[in-house]
Amino acid sequence: MSEPSQSSRGVDASLVRAIGTLGLAASIVNVTVGGGIFRLPASPDVTGRLGAAAPLAYLVCAVVMGLIVLCIAEAGSRISLTGGPYAYVEMTFGRYVGFLVGVMLWLIGATAIPGVAGLFADAAARLVPALGSTAGRALFLAVMFAAVTLINVLGVKQGTRLNTMLTVAKLAPLLLLLGVGLFAIDTQNLRWTHTPAVGDLSRASVILIFAFAGVESALVPSGEVRDTARTVPRAVFLAMALITLLYIGLQVVAQGVLGSALVGDATPLATAAGKVFGPWGVVMLSTGFLISAFGYLSGMMLAVPRALFAFGRDGILPHQLARVHPRYHTPWVAIIAQSALAWVLAVTNKFEALAIIANVSAALVYLGCAAAAWKLRRTPAMPGAFRVPGGAIVPALAAAAVLFLLASVTVKEWSVLAAVVVVASALYFIAGTRAPLIERE
Image 1 (cartoon, rainbow, N blue to C red):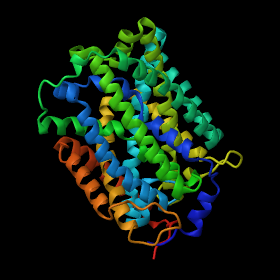
Image 2 (image 1 turned 90 degrees about the vertical axis):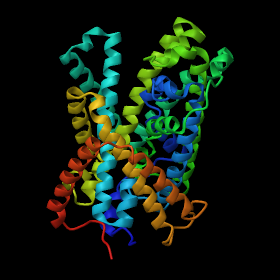
Image 3 (image 1 turned 60 degrees about the vertical axis):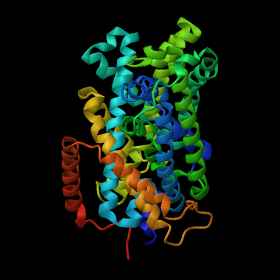
Image 4 (image 1 turned 120 degrees about the vertical axis):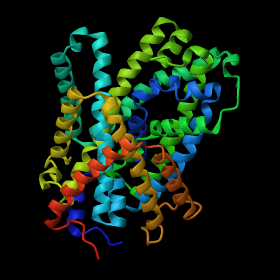
């Protein structure tokens, strides 16, 4: 593996390394704990299949995601270029493979941002009916994206600070429900009526694994992280520990409070909060959902445009996308371009139409990170770089877990992915005559 060239280092050097451990951990939590957690406990594929044994699926997901996170932490502590997993794979397996992983990484955010934005707009329309019209919805989304874009263009410090505040704001009602709700549980609702079948546990885990996704997008601004070798692994482990405990705790509270009424509830946490606190509890959790959704969008708009920046930096996409604002030192062109695309997709699509691409893309990014961690550990590392315990076993287990997830993908879903790969490959080879910014031996 060769080192980044002077040109790639020069482009990244113009960015400000302002993200520390707490800021990066907050960004990971913010991006991971989105709107889904407010609906997750009532999923028919989770609670409907497993009943009171649903926390087992979270534990399975935590183990699988833990393997993936270990790989991401090792790769992230050795590669400090902006681009996150895209940069990890690009530096180990070459430009083309790295580019495809970068496309998958970008697709996760490019589909999730407009999807969650649509849910955010729908929730706002319930409070202000005028926003429910086509024009009102489009205008609301335009204002929302403009605000998030402005915040992130003004500087990574502002974007990170907003992410930290929003993470605290959205976790507060969830932690309050968790702390008080534990004393309102009916233990009868937590008794197992049967031992879950392996197939049901597997299916529930396959669905839930994507609820833990987000770390791969939050690590894209690696070129703006202080002391990468220490900050990345510490932030990743801190964030994932908090997320796992929060998910399991809320599942137990929702199940314990609502019992059989939990399955299929459109707003399970709000319903549980109504049982625990009364009517104001419903308002509290509903407001928490709006804060959570906005926080998610803010976090993704901090991270995802950096993938476009990396493509522009490496000569795959127009170099204008790699422009850094002379005053604020942020990739402002990439941020604006990403925001404009997200607005168009949010106005014209629903989340369900984009979820398939996001899910499969996430699994392939994880596979790339596992492979990169395996290869990177065989090369000299910078002082203090994190090393995964267990040698090559952990990357191998992580890869096997991801392949297991991909085994459940249908032919129709694979065809969508194939179309994306064909278009992306055509773009890559058309741009292949450009001189690479990351030189290789």
